[in-house]
Every structure is written in structure tokens, then in C-alpha cells.
Image (spheres, rainbow, N blue to C red):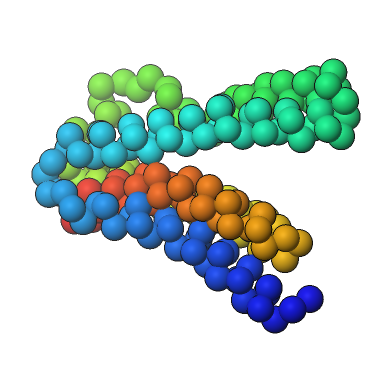
Amino acid sequence: METQTVLIAFGLTLFAGLSTGIGSALAFFARRTNTAFLSVALGFSAGVMIYVSLVEIFFKAKESLSAELGPRGGSWVTVGSFFGGILLIMIIDRLVPSFENPHEMHRVEEICNDGACRERKLMRMGLFSALAIAIHNFPEGLATFTATLQDPSLGYPIAVAIAIHNIPEGIAVSVPIYYATG
């Protein structure tokens, strides 16, 4: 293994990981009182991530699994994994206490009406998102690094794809924290 290849792999991994900061920096371009920006930024981030998940990753997974398991087996494993992921999230949603679960209905007395309470909830959402993204970025970095070590020409498009994916992640984390803390 050449030192130059390792440096390229490290550089591409660093580039892909730091691209989250590009999305994070967008929070500083809006006034804190502009809640429309908060809504649009979070909606944009969610849209990009859903598109990447459903359009890009799903069909790439099906293609890769079909190459290994045959067309029928690859299709079944892809669809099964998709619905298995939905089931896993449903189980997690059920395990989260109902008071903490944002999808559960609450009594009027329990709803956050003051600014401090809303800011705490936004801050908590942002911090949990940051933790989830940190855990999520580890395999991305590992995939970028190992793919580049295997074939540097493969590492470049993977790093760019991950960088494009990480920008909306940065928005999703930084905007709520920025609005919560100012």
C-alpha cells in the first residue's frame, strides 16, 4: 500500500466528513427570528435525505444484492431490509416514553407555550441529531477510506456523494441548535 494512496484516502474522508460543516454554516446566514428559514431549512434537509434514501440507496442496494444473490433473492432482501428498517423504527418509537415522544398527543397543560421550553426542546433535538449523525458518519468515513484504498478512482465519487449527503445533515443539526441558543 502506497503512502500517497493512504493520504488520498484520508483527504477524501476528511473532505466528506467536513462537508457537514458547510451545511452547518448556513445557519449563520439567517436572522434568529426568521422561523420561516428554520422551517424551510429543515424541510429541505429532510427532502434531500429522503430522496437519497429512497431513490439512490434503495436501487443501489437492490443492484448490489442482486449481483450477489441473483435477481429474485436480491429483490427480496432489499424489500425485506426496507420494511425491516420501518419495523425497527416503529419498535423504537414504541419504546420511547410517550411524554418524550414528539408523535404522541399531549394535554394542553403539557404543551410548551413559553419560549424557554421551546428552546430547550429545539436544543435537545439538535443535540440528539448531532449524536446520531456522529454515529452515522463513522461507517461513511470507513467506507470512503477503504474504497479509496482499494481503488482511488472509486473513492472520489463516493466522497463527493457523501459530501453532498452531509450538507443537509449539517443544516438539520445546526439550524435548530442555532435557533435554540442564538
